[in-house]
Picture 1: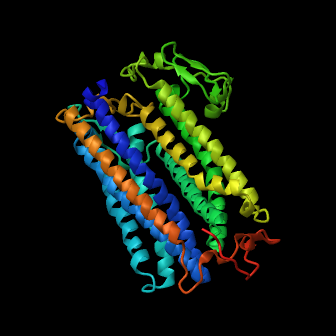
Picture 2: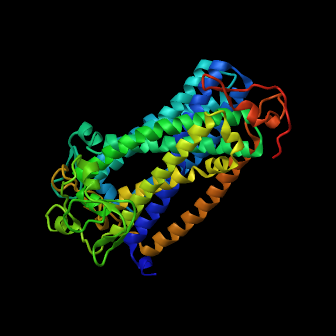
Picture 3: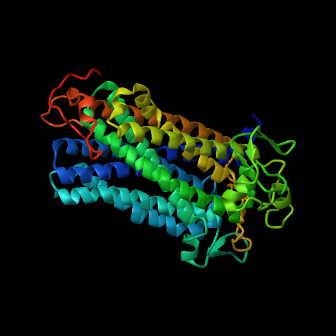
Length: 492
């Protein structure tokens, strides 16, 4: 229990807990926002009651998630001024603009048009209602942009200089700071991962209704939509993953060294899995591809990268201690993310084949169950990716990247507030966890109730009255359509 006496470690744990919890709802908000907007467009075009009911269903799911995302985001911002007061003083001149823009431009755009979706049905034109759904999704994506501008600046500082007294970073070029070297690949990679998450949640809902024999038409349409969004997002995600890896190799050499367990300079191999023995400073694994990581980062098989021991001897990375660096943790989270990406690709492929091939998924309960649990895989990948990004830049909270201005970096221990004791941080951490657990249970029960009710069509019989097999039939144009009016009661 020695960690309870370390205020720096406790402050990191508290922020990690609140950030990880907040990042349960952010992927769902942005990912499901697209699913909601596409359903609103379908409803606008068809004017069919079942499509309107589907739109209302996703608006309810989105809203419940949005509320929790806002509440947990506020908690994180408060911690900047308490546990991380010294850090806030250092980056305040940089972070003020993007955080203000996120609140004034993105959040109010998102929340205002969400109000139209909640209270404007039947009171505004169908065209405005449909546009509002897209503006809500655009607002959520814009919010992510401003947050990632701030976070990416911490990874690759730009457009700033160290103040005369050396206590803060001073903004010199807003565009250079906003468009820092890691922003574009990190933003694209993050948003696409969130779209995959939303698509998998849509597939999970559809798979659940297929298992229960309810809401057949909704399940069929939702499964097809989820599969298409997942396939497209995953394919593009692969490209952004490569771009992000290239930026890490060029800008953050110590993070790359941790990701691949490199203590000494070498041509890094590509590991599928393994374990970093931090005492002997070597990777223990039965399998590796020599030069594989070098090829992915540079296109050549023989590029040598500096290891942690060599980097620690340089002036720029003198704050790095290879003996205490969390190398194995970063190695494991990085490779866990890659493994989850492989699982995502496999699920996408299976769902694509058996959804658009004469609707065979309706008879494959194992695949339906796989779809139901499928959101676990992108969720783990997203969380593991963020742990890799944040822990990988230790011991800095503002990383001294290869192109950052001289002196613009900050060690973690220099960013923690000296006036907050370890007892205070421990108490607030326990309280946060208790309240967050309560909110998570309340959110899960609310979402469960919405799913149990389903996309109810006013004046229509129970949505499970049409067999799923009769809905998910693929014609010669590869589009599924209902082909029978016969009905049977779907058991729940």
